[in-house]
Image 1 (spheres, rainbow, N blue to C red):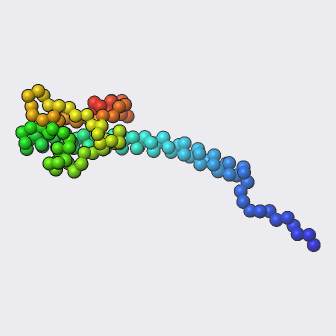
Image 2 (image 1 turned 60 degrees about the horizontal axis):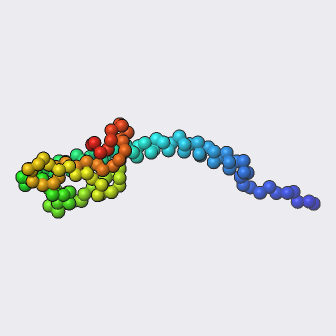
Image 3 (image 1 turned 180 degrees about the vertical axis):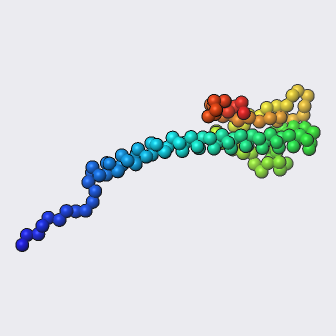
Amino acid sequence: MVNPVRRQSGFTLIELLVAMAIIATLLSLVAPRYLGHVDRAKETVLRDDLSTMRRLIDQFHGDRGRYPESLDELVTLRYLREVPVDPITERRDSWRVIPPPAGTKGNVADVKSGASGNSSEGTPYGDW
């Protein structure tokens, strides 16, 4: 008796290519939405960090009658635990410090992001 030829189980090349094409199509639909959400989340964190630092600079000024010399002074005197990371530049040292009016003590009256580029609303990050 002759043994019938057994077919090995597995996928053909065409089946694998079709499955990969379906996965690629689904990823191309989902990826832009995901990336848009990540960018908006970074912008939200940036707005919150700026609001917190500005509030703490005002508290420092109210407590001490002068503005801080640097953002690190806010950390040293425990107004902040640490200088936050700018979520757009992903660096702590990219904050732009705005000095107070002439004749006022201190060096930090306001803080802005040092990030270049525009937000999803079209406004420059540096204007926030």
